[in-house]
Length: 606
Image (cartoon, rainbow, N blue to C red; front, side, top):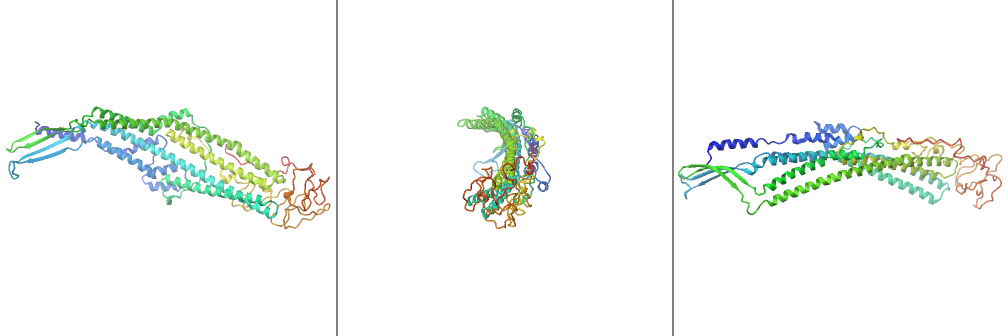
């Protein structure tokens, strides 16, 4: 039998013990932010999120600014942060006693109005809860630490998602500009083909081929423009901004690859100690292991209540004493609780092993992708682009001397633009691969501090390169051909220069003229023939496409008749088509002629 003097101190002690537990300060957000900051992803905590966002949106967007906007506004961050509140609540609950159970009964001897009824009052506490407070608190604390690490890991992953979306948007924007330039070039080629067809110098098949190429280029430009819009929308979404907040400016270009990459072995070591999700899984597994051990050793202990009871008997005597209640493990021996704890532990350990194995393989794969994209970029810069530019430069000289057709040059120019587009895609893929490598390592890469140069702007790639097609005058300007080498960029049509000794005006003012070839004009031209020289008779116009020039010397095989019959190779140039300066021995070499236009190369960022 307990006295009243023992009951009061015991209740006070239990109350003091239960008062030790409280909700963790700021739900652990400060520690979570520190975890992320240690890995190069500091979580901003502005006093006014709206003003903070407006300030960053009003500037040209950078990858760092995009990440900051996302960490402040993204619903995904708020959703993950809510887990801190749940884990903090578990810590609070685990460190406090269960509320006591109060009981009361009034018994009487068959007469409810009898004065001497039996009155019993009692209060009891859950002894198992009191016994396991330390163990439950440790488990809840470990789960809380795992939650903080998990939330910080989610912030690091979100930053990687934002950077990937940023590079996708910038790359798509640059590719859209390039495809638009290619489409304008192809349309200019089709327009020129239409003029040649109207003059009777090309066939319907050649015209249809140029028109189809122009249509395909326009379709590619439309597709690239749609991809740019989709990439911008995806970036706006991942930053946590609504559609009406899509006012930011993406005035940026992809940067060239870094001078030097990180060592793979060093990255593997860094990833082993930097991955927050692995550390969170490790703490969770350790907590579940401790809980499994506790459940296994206390499987027969379920519900034990201790308390005190005060009873007033019928004769007025008062009785006070302790009470004890517990479950008898007759039917349930706690095997279910032990099995559940073991299954949870097995699951946590499997998840930990999956992350550890995946981390090393992810790092290796991401680094391999970085190396592969670097190799592609180097091949574009060192081989394909210079080769395409050399082809265009050589063909420009050959066009000047009428060795090949203008459309062959236009095809080569479009292939040069395709090489530029492929180069931009390779640079985009390089930065996406580095973003995945950063995610796999779990923190900002040490090599990220290196200085880099921006890639060439598509507008710079389409600027004139000195001579080339600028020596070809076609009616003062060539609408739709802007952006071609030697021509003005899009939106700035300018007259095309005069080819030395050659005039190709398509406006109908006068026919094409060339020293020694006066009087020749495209079939179907309405212009008047130029006055013949004193030593030559005027010749009838003929079709230039029927002039094979590969069978020289002496221009054998040229058809000077209106009927197209093959003429005998003359010993000297036929009358009416005097080729002054055009004898085989005097034919200028496009590789050596001093009048060859100088072709300037597009500067590359090596």
